[in-house]
Image (cartoon, rainbow, N blue to C red):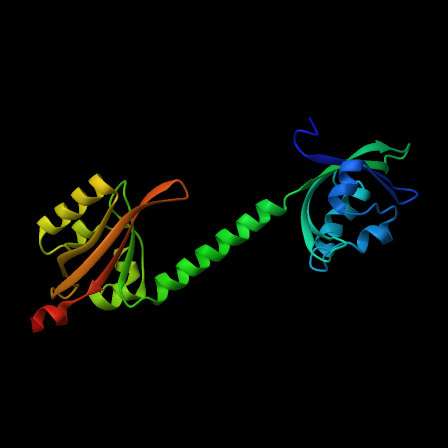
Length: 239
């Protein structure tokens, strides 16, 4: 089972402060540390305090098991992420831990994927907030706004508080219901709509010509409509 899960095993003697790692753990860690000092040298500086805050509680018997994620420095100089799970497996006559054992797993790929996702979300958030176009995130289930950017508030005159949790229909933002019908029809057929020429009503009742593109997304297991609308009112007026 351990082999299938790609887990290594380790054992720690509290009195002697000696570590014992199996072959898979040694391969994962890239070395075979025997003492606390040798093990500590491998830790990323940002992770060692967090690790020992939990480990010390375990060693004192305050907690009986732990789960920790940290980075270990390889001989090549790069760091590898490990998931470490341990528990007390033996006590002395006074109830103090004398032996701790656990497993270690390489989670580097998982952490790299999480970091890429974080960076992607950060880029999206930056583009979302700084775009001069009106960008909206709307719940497909009820048609209510989940989020709008500053471009939306500037073009239509609404504050975020005015619209979050409300729908475009409730706010009477669509000047021509047929434009909304075209959007819905396109989304149902293709999952996206590009360059829909539509009219919208600002908060003050002013008609705004917009060029809208929209697509369906799944965010946190929730169906969301992402719409980007360029204000082309001046262009329309000059035609």
